[in-house]
Every structure is written in C-alpha cells, then in structure tokens.
Length: 494
Image 1 (tube, helix red, strand yellow):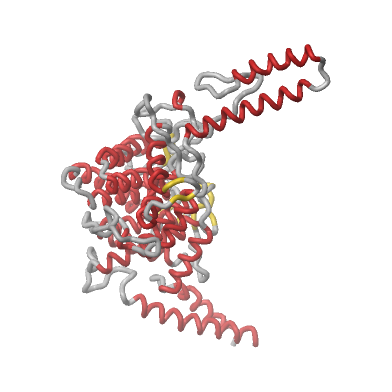
Image 2 (cartoon, rainbow, N blue to C red):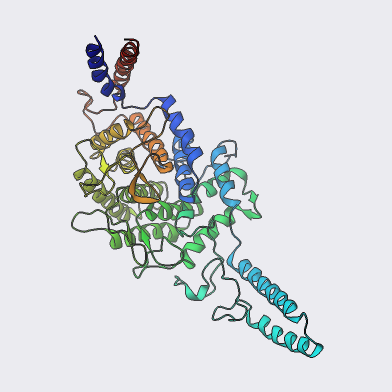
C-alpha cells in the first residue's frame, strides 16, 4: 500500500510547478517583496521603472504620450514614485561648491582646536609662537585644488575636484552632485526618472532643501563634468577611478534620454546614444557579440555576465522607446537603427546560448555556470519590449520560453529563486531584489504584448508556453498538488 502511495506522490510532485504563468495574486507577492527587499541605489532606481511600467503605464516610455510628462499629473497619481524620489532627495549631498566651503570651515575649526590644545602648559612666549605657527597652519590647511598642509590636512572633498577629474569642459563647470551619495557614479542616475516624474507631479516640491528639478540637473552635470571618463569618452560607472560596467547602460543613458526629451535638450538625448556606443565599443566581444561585465583598473570581470548583458540590452531598448516619444525620432532615425542593431546583437547571442531549460547562464557562454533566473527574466522582458515597440518580433518565442522557465522558479511565497547574487556576481543566491524587479518588468511587457495582439506567435497552434491555456494547466496542477498532499498524509497515517 505504501509503495503505491509513494509512487503516486512521486509522480505528482514534479507537476506541482507546471503552471508557468504567474497569477495576479502571485505577482502581487512578487511586487510587495520587491519593495521590501530594495535597499541600494540601483535597486531603488530599477524598482521605480518597474513601478511605473506595472502600476502607472501611461507614464512609461513604452506608452505613447508619456513624454513630455502630461500636465495635470499630481502626486496622488504616482504616490510610489514620489515616495522613492523623496527617499532619494533625503540623501542628496550638497553641491560641490557648498561642500568646498564646508570643508574650509572644518579645516579652520580643526586648526583652531589643535592650536588651543598645543597652548596648554606653555608660557606666554610659547603661546605667541604657537599662535603664529597655528595661524600659518590654518592658512595652508584650507582646501586647495593643488595641495594641502601636511600638518593639518583638509578633509577630502566628497567629490573629486574639478582639476583632477577629466571632463568635457574644464572651465566654468557647473555644480554637480549625484541624487544619492554613492561610490558608483552611474547608479544614482537610475533614480533620475523618478525624480523628474515626481517633480512634475508635485509642482517641483522641495525635499532636503533641494528642488526635484535641481537634483535632476545636478545629476546630469555631475555625470558630464565631474566623473572620470575612459579614453573613448565613456563616463565611468565608478566615482573614484575609471571602470566601465555593462550595468551602466540601464542606469545612465536612459536617464539622459528621458531628461533630455522632457527638457527639450537635444544634446543630452544624443549623449545617451554616444554613451551606449562608447560602452559597446569597450565591452563587446566581437567574436560572439556578448558584453564583458567590467573593464579597466582594479576591478575587472572579463566574464560575459548574463545580468550585465541583460542590463545593457534592456537599457538600449529603453533609450529607443524614449527617443521614439520625442520630436527627434525622425532626425535620429539612423541612431535608432544603430541602437536596435546593438540590442539585436545581445539578444541573438543570448538566444544562441540559451540552455535546454530555456534559461540563460550566469556567465552566458560558460557551460559550468549555473542557470540564472535574473538574466533570463530581463532578457525575456527585453525581447517582448522589442515587439511592443514594433522593432522586431524575432525574439518573442524565446522570450516567452524564458519567461515561462523563470516563472517556474518563483516559489510559493513570491521569491524568484536560482538567482545570481548581485553583490557577488559569480555566486548563486537564494533571492535578489533585482530578480523581483525583473519579474515585474517582464510581466509588464508581457501584458502590453498581449494587449497588442500577441505578435510573433502562431495563434492557431498557440505555440507559446504562456498562452491562455496556462490557466487550465494551473488548474490541473492544483488538482495534482492536492492529490499529492493527500497521498503524503496517507503515508504518514499508514
């Protein structure tokens, strides 16, 4: 008897996860976990994009009329975006010139305190000598763009000084600070869209003595004028030394394009294209069209990281969508075609390296690397977005296969499992804030794809794994799951 029950349970268990399209209830769990797990700058930035696409699609660059942001929008229309933007502005550092003034005052105070301590126990003559000496020290310890006092060094400015950071323009540089204090120069830009949108929705409110519009403009100026660059002009993803990360293409170029279209700044929109081109030139491996993860200086990852390639492809497509919202779409037609071809390169390369389980490996072309739900999901989202933008339907079948495969890795509590550790790229993690975000981005794209008529699949044969029949599959899985539970209960009794 036990052997019969055990066999029934064993046969039933693998089918418990056969439903591949996530239900609304499950997606709500994924969404809620996305909000609770998000901590870092880039996580909040990518989360804000997911929130807009899922909750407020009319303000997403994937929907016509989203840019320029329509008049009449209020904070009640996008409360989650305002909340994220407020979190960001609460941490916005002072502009560089204000930091310099504060550093000067701190240095003078430090010198005065040191002088007072040295005077104790000295006679009057020694005091006068100490005062004379300390006066000289106080003068030399004030911040300088060329040197500082060895005896009383001034505090290091928060951001690199104008003279030591290669910039596009080395004269009359405007103040520039990131939206959030971060050692990654590129990550705070991921918050740019939410800050611009919240600014419009709140009438350019002030948070932490900073207007939304000022925070956005200073973020632009910081990237253009105060962050080091690679020899080809690529803006570093890191603040203190030149490092190019594939991730950057999802953070910086989409912000440049979004802010440029919103403010009518053609040069900034074109810079979004220039930065993608520069990053591609530096990171793409011409033999397979996959992008290296990190290049230059101390931190180098020569591997073709799956999530890095997904970040890059998704960022490129966001820029295309943004330019298509603008009056520049005809003028920049050739650049849009370039961008599409660059996204094509990554999409084709990941498709060619897809595993038999319809997954992307953590390091795409490394067969010993684990299958990663994060990269798989974001690549799927990108393929579907390329369809909804009428760029190509070529990646729809594989994108649906990938999304189905990744959806099976969402557990009953809403966590996406079998994911890369975003802090330790080569290590598999049990959950990831990025992964939660990618599921929401993918299902946002999937929902739009359905609304547009399910382009790119054979509707007669319903040859995709996320079609309407998946609900029936879910019902069957539920029945089998119940039978399995009963079987296991009987096993315990017997």
